[in-house]
Image 1: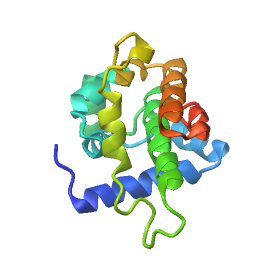
Image 2 (image 1 turned 30 degrees about the horizontal axis):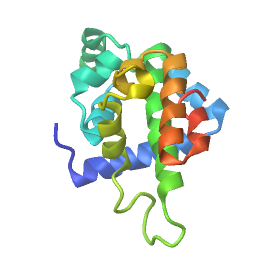
Image 3 (image 1 turned 120 degrees about the vertical axis):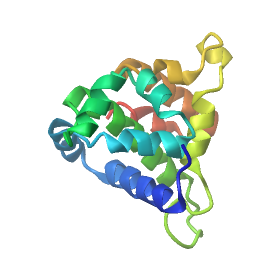
Length: 163
């Protein structure tokens, strides 16, 4: 899936919105359910096949497709994994932006694609497994966020995928 410039701007705006929400606002969003289209948009921005991201987030692809076809939102458990991923990207965008960088947050830096590449790269820290293999449960997301933070000098990121 190729994400257009407009698509990347949509994903950036969505991720920043999620990152800037209070925990209560994020919980309300998750409880209401997220539109399934965001799964595909996040996957595209990260350079990950939608089917793979769906699998690694522990979601049932048939259920997601059915919800999309019926114009329904995802259930809270499904929405939580998507919201956590969006928050992680949004927080990374906010933290990686240079204070002197003009323009919108994340300009010139494709954090989502960097994260997508990193998630698919096996590491000795995870017994030579790729971090993406741990995103299906909150504890795994916390572990992966902590590892990302250690490797990218962003120690606040350890909290990002669990809040």
